[in-house]
Image (tube, rainbow, N blue to C red; front, side, top):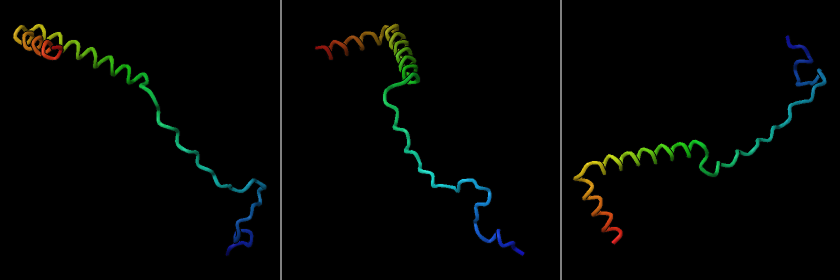
Length: 74
């Protein structure tokens, strides 16, 4: 058997009733590069520098690359 107090939602304890929680809007997206972007750019620049250095060490590619640079500058 249900007791009469349990039939209805009664605030017996004196605590405030639940109120509607207004959701906060999401944070705006980050702008700028950030530390992870700077590290990634440094790693990519270092890798590209090593690649170009290895390509220029090979004598048969140096002529092609210098001709390409002269054509672009030209």
